[in-house]
Every structure is written in structure tokens, then in C-alpha cells.
Image 1 (cartoon, rainbow, N blue to C red):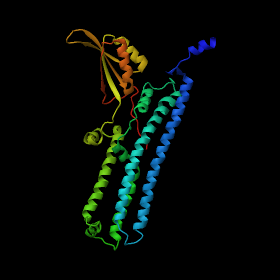
Image 2: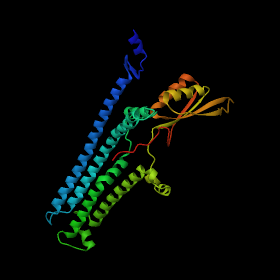
Image 3: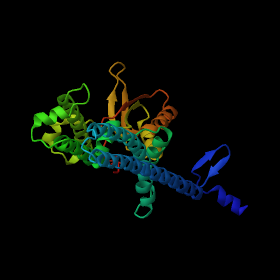
Image 4: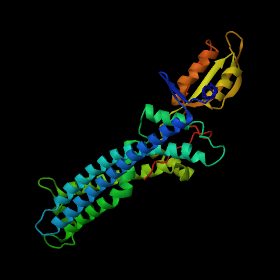
Amino acid sequence: MADEACNDHEPRTWKFRGYELDPANFTTAMVHLYRGEIQRANTWRQRLDATTNWAVITAAGALTFVFGEPTNPHFVFLLVLLLVLTFLMIEARRYRYYVLWAYRVHLMETDFLAAMFVPPFQPSPDWGSNLAQTLSEPSFPIDTWQAVGRRFRRNYLWLMALLVTSWVIKLTIHPTRTVSWRTVLDRAAVGPVPGPFIVAAVAAIFLVLTMIALAATLSESRRAVPEFIRRVARPLMPEPRRKERLATIITREGQTVAGRILEELGRGVTALEGKGMYTGQSWDVLLSAVTDVQVRHLRDIVRDVDPDAFVVVGLASEIRGGGFSPFEPPS
């Protein structure tokens, strides 16, 4: 009986259909989740390397073939350039998946595992909400254009520059050497398409990718960019999508509602004094920044304490501090 009494007082962290999860089993479940997310991240990281290897092998084969004989056509470089662009798009899509798994691993490593080694030996208040958010409603932490810009800057910039340079050299030395740019432009023609049009198209593609890479660089190093550059380059530095919400609660039970928010959600609350202009009655106005997955719990708290309360939940354009921190995607 004593053992049963002790067991009844053990903390329970999860209960569903008669099953209960104590802290030890919760930690075991987290370990298995961490191992699974690490495996996923490693799998998608290997897929990134595979796509880059395809591009490198294809470019190497094109160089060997085109420069093998003076009569071999130069437009093979253009075809390979389009193929490398396809590889870039495939790798950008894979990179978005890799960043998603890496984000989950980052949450568990920094807010759950690392918290075991330093006081107060507990996770930050929002780590569980952030992890639950990405598990229940998965969304990519970065956009497609950001992924394209990052992969182009880190891998494909040099590969595509090599292809374009080799293409120009091919036009210059084959079938005979020339120093006339007019002759080079004429040789760049592909069938009925004139050479100047081909050169302009290649330059435009390279310029667009360079602009996307620059925009991705500015977006990931926002704090390091001087203010005057941020004002000029604001179209290239869009604000990241966020999942935080700002809740405004108008109630007569402000102290009770605030206490439960502090205790159950671990979120700070700011109280203001309000007055209904129609009724002339005094109200407590509470402001609290919460994560997306905490909104439902917040509404349940308010409904339980004061069914007549008025709740407004809106998107927050930017929240910093108090557990709200940005995530830097890995390379």
C-alpha cells in the first residue's frame, strides 16, 4: 500500500486513454524522437551531397567531351547549364526539408539536452510549444527562393561560372582561334537563334541567380547589415514568417487569468486599466505574447475563468526576447 501511495504522488506528464507517462518514460520517448530526427536530418543531408555530385559529374563529362575535338558543338555547355539549373532546383527543395529536420534537432539539443547541464536545469518556457508546432503543423523555416540563393552561393556559383567560362573559351578557340568578339557572338548561335540572344539569355540567368543569392545573404545576416543598406535593400530582405501571436484579453478577472497564464503557459503578462466607453465600466486589459500552439490553451483558460471576457488574438510582426529567438538554418 505504501508503494502504491508513493506511486500515486509521482508526477505524470502525459495521460491518454488510461495510459500514463511518467518523467522517466517521457525522457525515453524524447531520446527516441531525437534519434529519429537525427536520422532524418542525416538522410536529407546526404541527398544534398548526392545532387551536388550529379552536377559535378555532369559538368566534368561536358568539359571532356566539348574540348575533346574542335568540331564538337559548343551548345553542349548550354544543355549542361540547364541540367545544372535543374539540379539546383532539386537541391533547393531537398535543402528545405533538411532545414525542417535540422530545426527540430536544434530545438531538442539547445532547449532540452543542453538545459540539463546548466542551472536552472530546465528547458526554456517555449521550447515545447515550438516543438509541438513543427510536429503538428510542419512548415518549412525558409522559402524556396532563400533555399535557391543559399545553395547557389555555396555550391553552384563556382560550377556554373566554370561552365560559362569554358563555353566562352570554346567559342574563342574552336574551330579556330579568334580575338574578335563579333566572331564569338556569331559562333554562339544555336540553329536559327542568333548568338547575341543566346549570350544575353545566359547573362540574364546568371544575373537573376546572383540577385537571389544576394537577397538570401541579406535575409540571413539581417543584424550584421548596416541600417542604410537595409533601407536601400528592403525589397531583398523580407521579414521572415512567424508563428507568434499577441493576445489582448479584456476581463473582470484579470488577476486570476494572468496567474493561470503565468503558471500554465509560462508566458509573461502585462496588465493595463481599461474603461468601456459605452458602459463606463472598468476592465482589466491583459497583453501576452504566445506561440501559435498556445492560443487554444489560452482561450480555454479565459473561458474557464471568465466566460464573458473578450479575447483578441492577432499575428505579431516581430517578437524578440523572453524565449522568442530566431533560428539560423544550417549550411
